[in-house]
Image (cartoon, rainbow, N blue to C red):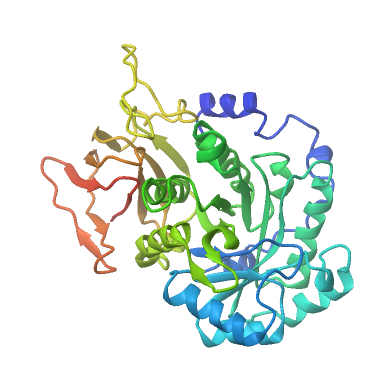
Length: 412
């Protein structure tokens, strides 16, 4: 991250504090098994339905749970459900091709209140293909950071084959989560201050870089008016997050998206289903990207809500992205368009890729990029699920970003 962005994050109190090594890592993990780490990363961009955690809030009867899973998969375009484990539920998820995020905060298998039962469960679930991850925490850390770091390390020992999802409020104590496979947070940015979106994303990204992990995020299902601007804002949240390394999203909360008695979606749930459908063609492609090695952004003339920004005579950047200008020596330069760009490699290869997300939730962007080294460029088509060559004219390529949308471009 560029120095100015790091400074901004430090001022907000969300970067790594300048503490002695022992204070930063009071429960050091065993030596990182990089091979196991790579294998346990989900091979699917996870869009997760949940109805809270720390207890059984899902339909208790297997038949109704199956009705829920069927609805989530067919009408909601969800590919994962977070819930308390049972053998019946796991079998239902397997039957319908939906992943399970196992909540380890319920009393039967509580991660630290019932550690023995939790260890037995995690050991039993090793290599189960229906399990995508374990949910360890999604709340304020307070003084519990060291304990949550311990829990992550324990689960990695008990089951080295499945990812850990551990989150905090905003970036509070997020340094304790750096060894989680999914370094996660929640802030419900459109409700609590959209100007915090990128500071928190960059703070999580900064922690994920320590162990080459990925990001998770708890997002609101009612970021805007349901059935209207809610879709735009929710799509914006996910696409800007993916550009920064997001690989799993939990929608808050099930009862806000559907009637948990009738199991029918309301307007907010239908908006979530629409966002899920937009991203569905990318579910298998996004996880192939490594954690961004750099995050760059263009100046903006409009804010996230498409309102003009008063000109100052100097370039204006979106809040939190002030230190992320594209360096003049970088081989990709912006000619037009307003976007944030995560720069990655395809995992295990030398192939470059960028994920560009529109910095405007309500207006299209006409993007043009100048390439200063000889490469072939291709853009991922959500319609075909394949890459399509981008023609170059004098070293320039161009494409459009829909409101709140994004593009994945590969270079060879």
